[in-house]
Image (cartoon, rainbow, N blue to C red; front, side):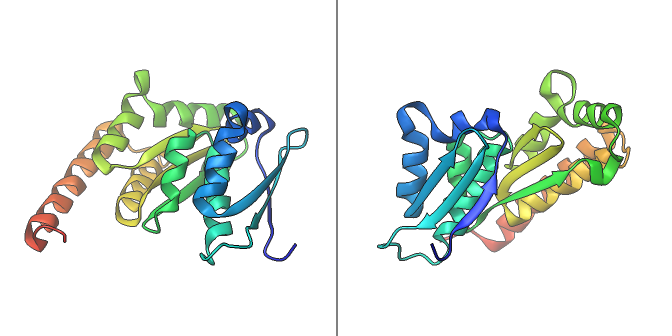
Length: 187
């Protein structure tokens, strides 16, 4: 099949992708005008355009939605990727801390924070969604906010103190607010 994309997701996320009675998969297919075939045993997913699909990016969008679900996001958040302004960024923890399971666990703990506080602050200050799953940290949001959230996560991975990261996020939030005020209401 031309334009078919293939990818793998963790087997334990296949059920989330399919959803109760196949509803999630069906919603993604309708939203993106694609056809999604899932091999539950292997975690393999094939995405192809439907004949009537008008959007040349439909397969690409569906691929990112499936990838987001595979990285731990719930389907409602993954579906936000249908918007051209919303993007998915995946940070591979071994790229920053090596392959040591202990180091990866420690960094995941630092990004999540006590009772999820750090992750919640990143989400709240940037308006992006954060998922820590397996050996990755994934972010969903618009380009500007995504970059700020990614920078905050990278600061944590580089050993910055949480207080420093929170100050950075507060400053960026203020800068964005000022820019919105200067630009006036968006039409």
